[in-house]
Amino acid sequence: MTIKKKIVVWYTIWMALLVAITAIALFSGSGILLRREIVEDLEEAVHDALGDIGYSDGRIWLDGMEFYDDGIYLSIWRDGELYAGRLPEGVPPAAFDDGAVQKLSGAEGEWYVFDLSAWGDIMIRGAARSYDLGAFASSMQIMTLLILPMIVLLAAFGGWLIVRRSFMPADRVIATAGDIAESNDLSKRIGLGEGSDEILQMATAFDIMLTRIEEAFEKEKQFTSDASHELRTPISVIMAETEYASGHTDDPKKMQEALDVISRQAGKMSRLVSELLLLARSDKGTLQLHPERFDISELGEMVLSTMEDRAAAKDISLSLKAPEGLFVSADQDMIMRAMINLVSNAISYGHAGGWTIMRIASDGGYATVSVEDNGIGIAPEHMGRVWDRFYQADPSRTTDSSSGAGLGLSIVREIVEAHHGRVTVESIEGQGSTFSFAIPLSSG
Image 1 (cartoon, one colour):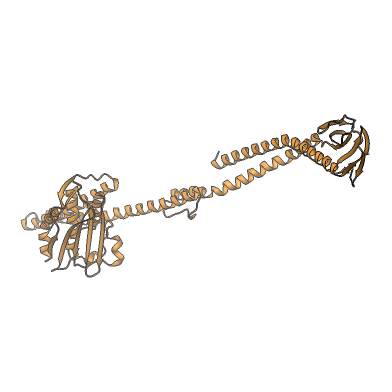
Image 2 (cartoon, helix red, strand yellow; image 1 turned 180 degrees about the horizontal axis):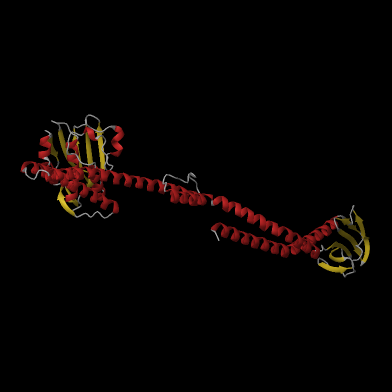
């Protein structure tokens, strides 16, 4: 049985029980209420009649008194004899009982009688027929037997409509999931919009989840395609150079040239595989850090010294502006790699005769590292994607033939975020860029 059917069945059962309990309470309470109403009306009529009677020197005056009103009979008795008014036919005689209500059974049914004495020997009696509670109860039972099934059926139908409408988003979720499973089309959405009830919120969350899955899947496809493309080139070069060297075994010079090319391409592949491995570990959450306390300013100086030859080849000057004794607790090799990637990126997109400055500073509990250059800069439309994997705004504009595959900045971001830091970029096209990252300072 589906959830919708279960809800409708339970809803119908509880509605039936509620109606049955209400009917039982009505039956049991109706008799008491009717009796109380009769007695209250009878007592009120007798007291009102007393106000219409005058008495003086043994004489009685009746001031427009009505002896029958709204089913109540009134009579005046003096010394046990009927003085005025009348009793209904079929009411048996009964002794007077001042201030008490008596229930008498006569030929025409049951009657309630109420006596009230006045001026000693004068008695006012009121009589009213008791309603036929048995007939009333029978009528109520017949009405209940007719109405109760209708109420239960209407409740079941109304509950079914409410449940059906409430579960429409869930049906849409099931249908959309089925369509995606059959077509492998992650672009499909439920599209119910936002709402306040739980199922609409579930549908919205399902759409958000589908969007993220689609984005992750597309990134994975692009990543695989880009990685294959980047590996294909050095592999093709290695195969071609291997074939070339095999054909010139008698020429040591040509063989050495071929081996040099193979060595460079193999190194490029090794670096690319290493970068891909780091990114894969980061994605899986298995990137292991080995934190230690070190002076990040000294590390920056070491990085620039390792990049001097490459910068000199393009006539780019390197400089460092950093305070002494700025310590962090981090994985030194990882942070060094992030710094090298930023400096390498600045050299790759720098102008001959230009400059690159590394600035290291302390800012609110963080050590900030920024690499500024006066290179080609980045166009505004590319700013949001510079940290994406394999993304290069315009590879043809790089001034360095040894530029990488577009993973350097992605690796910087992964390393910094693994250290609970943040990355930023500022750039003006044609004037240069500043790439920065910040990691927490050492608390020791």
